[in-house]
Length: 290
Image (cartoon, rainbow, N blue to C red; front, side):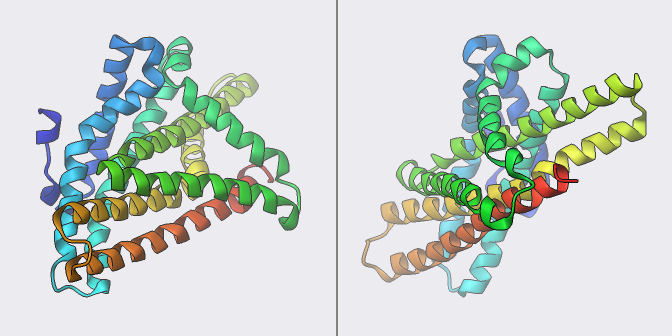
């Protein structure tokens, strides 16, 4: 009750930047609780506790967006209104990403192993598909691109289905992906700092800034459009879910909602395509091929 009362959907849409702070706090509290209560299962439990904290806001926001679909707004204006909801979610998940990275960087290794074990395993699998192919041609990299695109499309479909079936069910998947990106960033920064310390013995403030900046940029290039694609898809599925409950399937109102949700799904597909392209053809060449 305390966390869900901190901010409502209307205030969040008016000040989406504040959601960065809430995302950071939600995940940080979840980390403490999961390590305290179930340390052996904390890797997924932290994601679960974060999801619980964000459920009321996401549910109320989806209902708020569904009401906009029933207004006299045109499709262009509706998309501008939906952008407010997507912005607040994006800031919240960026807060989760940064919180994850910071916890990963500063916690002791023995705690990190249990707290982020599943995320680390996922990152290892992803990196094995990409990093070993950075010097190959565009056509040779295409199978890697299709594999990553296929995996991202599966997540996108899960976001739509979970939002449709459970209302805010996609929130767990979104939070999970934010935690994976955060661990990837934190791991990249820790590795870079370790290399600097081993080669020079010390790390200056400028070098710290450089390492942190590169670490965040390395995964933000494809991570932000990827999260955006899932956010847009989750919003579309949630709007349809609310509409099915509140309106007759054959009504004019329902048809308008389906049209708007279809537009959102199309946008999410564009984002997921761009994210996969950046992950395979841009990020590896920028950070591994230099």
